[in-house]
Length: 345
Image (tube, rainbow, N blue to C red; front, side, top):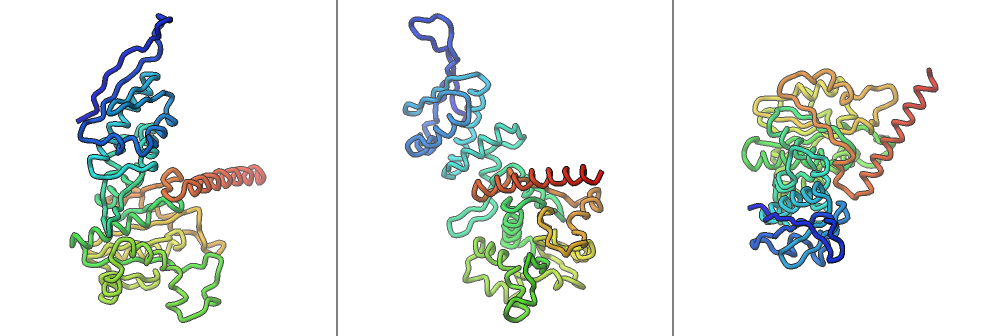
């Protein structure tokens, strides 16, 4: 049930010139005002700061004074936030800010559709997309056999893929999960690291283990690893295999060569699904080696049942500063490339 909506022009007693129109919204009785407006009206202040309008709340009535276009957006925002609350989800500052951003960018997807899509729940924590591009990425994984998630750090490309893998395993859509990464040095040399080969490789696989612990009860992980239901291994271990009835994730794919990328993709077996994730701006291959992730889209872009999802700095869901850092580096590198081109002309 949408929020009741009414409006009238406000005037004062001394000036007959109509002022800005005032729009009145009524919060449905089934939704507690504090759940929508936040403790001490925290969410209401965020909304007012995000729009060119004045907002006043009294009980279940919200009055907005401002341009009709801004008031219409605020009405839509309140409707979306009410829908989210009705799903049982608690609003947060981040939820409100992301809802505002989605409405401002005029995407086809409604904020409630994006922010209420539950992928996986474990120990009271629910994993869901937080941006429109993340939802499109998750939807693509459902619809296609091979999906490439390409974007900067913090955009959730690997984390969401792993959540979809665990979801598929729990639904018995696959029999096992295979997580793999190329063991490429990022400024260090494997030979100088202490320990056995497996101990040397472990730092490259540790982020995958960490994500697993968020999604599966930690006490069951050793048993799943021992039985082979979940396999975490370097990319080299994939050679010569045919992977059937599996959900396979290749992480840090920017550090594959074109030959390694081809080798990995051709491991696809019957009843399997693949997700390849990476950041083409963070290649750690030796100088002169091409990244398989950089060339694969040119090769496979027109192949049916393969989808490329691109995430950007606006999809970063870590600390706000991470998104700003990613965007700043992108602008700097674009400027450096431009200066380099002018220098060589």
